[in-house]
Image: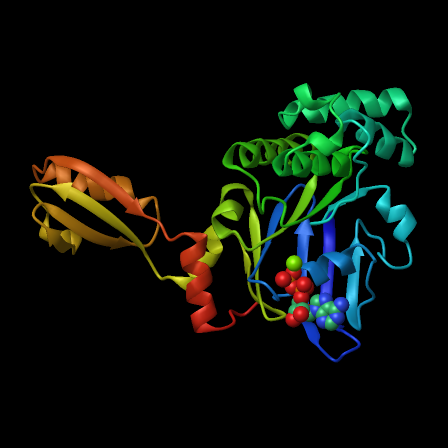
Length: 303
Ligand SMILES: Nc1ncnc2c1ncn2[C@@H]1O[C@H](COP(=O)(O)OP(=O)(O)O)[C@@H](O)[C@H]1O
Ligand SMILES: [Mg+2]
């Protein structure tokens, strides 16, 4: 089942600004979907539309088969949203906040306590459970916001720039939790970020946005194939067979182009069979960042 379905979505703000132009995509359940793009691309607008906070001016949206505007109440039982400004109570402790929000979702005090403590532990906040929120650092607040968003075990989680301002340690615990939720509980994550390196660590699929348009859609492997026609391999060896069509990069260093990863062992075998002593083989993968900038320069891919 698709957790999210967006068809020819358009949003024109009342001032006339077209923030989204003909966006179509689906996110299968259990996927971590990276919705990427620079500031102003239309990411937050999309999250607001998916949560029924805004009305589309064109097209259709379904989240878990529901219409976010007309079935908001039902939908919000199964979704969680983390935006940049999540409201919580400074005078309550970490676990106190989680109990409060759990009970708002109809959980019992005991249920929200158990689930809350479990989340605090996974996010490295166990020791701060009984500390009032007002003493939390920014990174701790952000992690607690995520716990708050997850308290009622949502099936779909919307994260709008969740790691902006997080230290590497916090980012790591957030990532581990998101991966665990997606793999073990089948939670769908719709992650908006402009931090491409961060996204590449956890996402299965990507949508690349720019200026209200969807430039490309798919897995990293798919996007790489669509953007670049080959991979590169850097090989350090004393002998390089001519038939491999390499480019000499330096003394005993050669660059080879290839189409599929399965060719790498064949290349290595061919060199060894010709008596080559290989000291290093380094695949030069194109990163999400490489792809993104190539797409921004080259324009829209057919999506
Ligand atoms: N309430 C609003 N009224 C008018 N224009 C808006 C409003 N919110 C956002 N925009 C404009 O819509 C575009 C997309 O914004 P946004 O969805 O916030 O992008 P992102 O989250 O990717 O940075 C931007 O040009 C922004 O200025
Ligand atoms: Mg935004």
